[in-house]
Length: 632
Image (cartoon, rainbow, N blue to C red; front, top):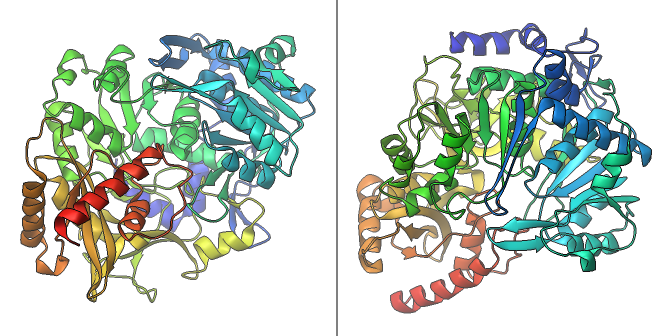
């Protein structure tokens, strides 16, 4: 397979290329119009085609004779529950839940908010909505009421589907009090609140008036068939949260997305129908939508729903246990999960307990993966760890490697090459394309390929200003990057992660690479803090590996020395503070902006996506101690 030729064809003859790919999925009406323009002159894909996402994920496989294949494996070490569902069993519940939604008055074009934990019923709710053309918005379970309110008032759902609780390691997180508070605060009143009772404890005191029991609704409802949906009809909304301002409701189409996901599963992930594929992501994130639900099920893969943590349920061997037990062929997770495992099990002792002989590939995304973590993975797991890059907005990979066959070469620290459909350039500030090995802004020539965002829900002005106004005719990613002479692209981080030290533009990600290569460092974050003399200077925050005995003073000296040797004195990194843990989002991204704000002693809002608010106090205390000791 000539991947360069695939990319060339996808850029030079977009319509023919994607028409061919569209034939890989089943349409109720195959599109005759491959591309068209919406009212704002933004490209749409397959506008006159009709299909149904739930049909592609479930019903088609049953019609093809695979109804008894396991579609879903639910593994919950936090509740000691395991369950498997065949395609036949999944269709029964999904079609009846869809019927229940119809009986409540929901119809194609309505919206529903799904606020649930990592349980099969979340997936069923998503597919039930897709079955009848209801646009779903999945909200990460456990978000504060304010986050629910913002989404309810923006998308005005006719139903809110929730569960009684989620579980964080051993702690039960009650959802209904949060839902009740959100309903009270929201300007838009939700007509139907459907709740799945997990029955983990006696929770009658949490119930409130007007709740509809999920199981009763399913039992009493008639199964409903799939509705024909236009390709450009929104499948879902997914809000990207910021620390300030209103979240953006990224809108995803149906036909282009289904085409892109089928292409991804085959060419990028190289996974065969019938195999087990596991994306260890929450349903509330883009990865959970694309590669825990829709992608694998379209491709007739068994998908794993995991409710737990990589290092605490019960130990840092959990990932390897699941891969071994369910014969996972290909896995996708965030680098932070692998770093956490590496920190707890630096010698890879827990890996040796499991048979990973059928495990072929590990994909990483969400954050750039440092070389030290890739080295650890290669040494102890022995399968390719492939970093790739994409965004909530794209819905599927933009950079990566085509791994359908084994004719691919990994360059460590690179996110790979442009994926077919993405005409990627590296621009300077004035919109001129840069030569190889020069850092600039990653942009994509329009039109974006199928599966990318339709826009921002009810806010075209924000869509244009956020993504399309920086360079005429190009999508602005907001990330910095370098392309090498072989066409591999290295993401240097969000544009605001490039710091200016006395007029020198320096990449904090390059410094992080050097810091994380230290044998005692488990993970780190380097941010630019304010400096009266130089404008900004870098500051490293470091987590040490378990069992490390190096002193804080010595680790700081060695890190400063390594940065000076590799980058030079211009980097001016003189501060390396050791902490027990870094602040992260629930999806595993390090909250670098928060670290920077705390170090600069500026006012801040607690990010809605933070995993544990207590870490803010921990870091503030550590900063005070560090500054007292270092008199700065």
